[in-house]
Image 1 (cartoon, rainbow, N blue to C red):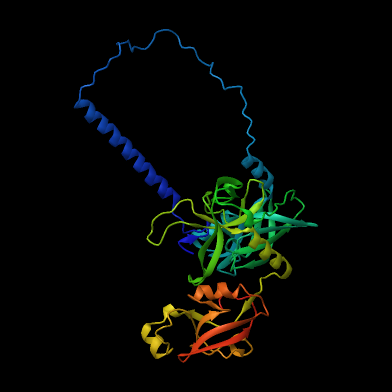
Image 2: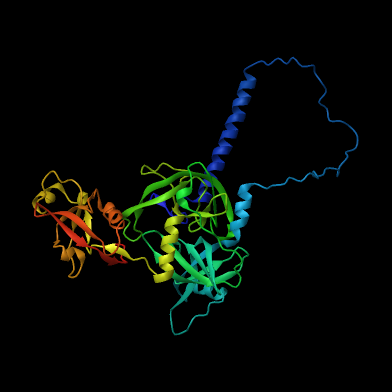
Length: 431
C-alpha cells in the first residue's frame, strides 16, 4: 500500500541524512538569531530601570563536591506501565535469515574467511545465511513444549531460516507454521521451555476512538527490542488499500485500526495493546507520505485482533487460509481503453466499472460452470456492485466456500445473470 509501507520496509527515509538535515537547520536558525540580536542591539538604545550592581567574579575559595541528588522517590504506577509490564515478556524480535551467495575470491572471500566461513577449493561460490531483515512478534500460545508466535507475513517473506529473540535476550530457532499474504499474518513455532509469558487477545470490536493504545516491538531491529510507544486509537475501522509485493498492484482493501502510537521500521508484527494489557491488534504498516510525496507522521495501522484470531486459528489447523474462489484471472475495467471497451468488449456506454475476465476459466472452476468466457465483464457479485478489481476480492471473501451467489456480467455486450457455487483457493492472485 505504498506509500503505506510495512514499518520495517527498507524504503523508509534515511535517518542519518535526516539527522544531518535537522542539525543544519538548527544551527542555521541559531546563527540567524544571534546575528539578528546583534544587529538589533547596535541599532537601538535600551534603558534599564534597575539599579546597577557589580558583576565581578567573587573572590575566595570554591566549595565543591557537595551537590547531591534528591532522596525523594516517585512511585510510577500508571495504567500504561502496568499494561506494558503484563505484556512485555511475550514480545519477541523476529529475524529473517536468507541465503546469500558470494564469491570466495577477492574482498568478499577475505571477509568471509575473517568471519570464519570456510570455502571449498572446488567451488568459486558459497552460500551462507545472513540477516536480511528484522521485525517483531508476540507469543500468544503455549502447548506442551511448543510456543506459538504471531507476526506479519512480510516479516518472514523470503526467509530460508527464522530466529526469534525472547525478551530475556535468548535466541531460538523458529519454524514457519503458516502464513497468509491477504491479511499479512504468519504463525511461527518455537521451543517453549524458556517461555514464561504469553499474551492474551482483547476484543477489537470493543475499542473506542480516543482510548489509549500502546505499541511494543523492536524499532530499527533487536538493538531496541521491547520498545514502548503510546498514543490513541485514531480510527476503529479504517479501510486502506493492500498492494501485492511482487506485482506492486492493489489486490484489495484491508480494514485496520489506525493509531498515532509511533510505529517504526522493525515494529511490524508486534502487538498493539490496550490499557488492560490485552492485544487488540498486530502492527503491520504505516503511512509514510501521500501521493504527492508529503511526509506524514502519526499514521500507523494494525490488524484488528478479532481478525488475527480467526486467521491464526486457521493457520495452526491447516497451515494456510482457505477462501472462496471463482477461478478467474481478471483486470480492472478502468485499465482497458475506451476504444477497446467498445470494439473488443462491446460494452454499452452505461457500463463504467467492473472487472474483465482475461482468460477462459479452467474446466471445473465455478466460473467455467457458470459459463463465463474470456473478455466477459463482471459488474456485480452477490447483488453487490463491483467498482474495481480490489472490491471483487473484498466481496468474494465475505462469502464462504460452498455458497451459491448471483453474478451479473456482460458477454459481447449482452447483460447476463447466473448463479455460481464457490469453491476454495489459497491463491492470492487468481480469484
